Length: 149
Image (tube, rainbow, N blue to C red; front, side, top):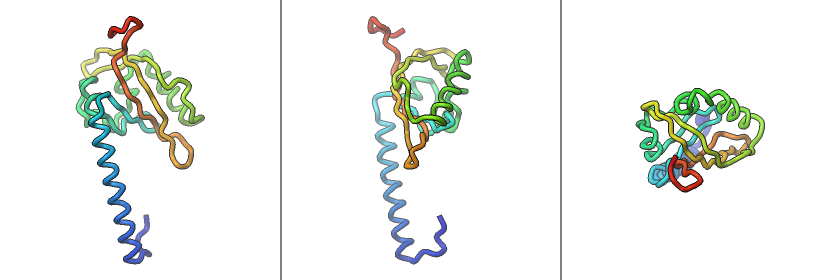
């Protein structure tokens, strides 16, 4: 934003607007971290924009080890990595529709073990109508008999 042509009043208004946004961001970040379920937010390329403590505990990572990293290259097993990444990027580029907002898939923990998880996903759509990423809640998969697999 070019502020060189702003009056003092306009500049003060813009500073107040940004402070308000920062306050809202901090409030929502607190809710995100306090959630009782694992939450992950990915941008349109599949990079981790936000991840809460619960998700970090589940995966065995610290938050700073995943922020900015590509989810698919870091946390998706190699056997399904390419098709899941390709599907994710194509869906974001072509359509704003999730074919299935709930799915079960495997992830890699920091130790290299695989976990089967249930993902519940919504699209994040910008003001321009384009998909900006996803937010997904994650729980350990409960098999048909209600036990963890």
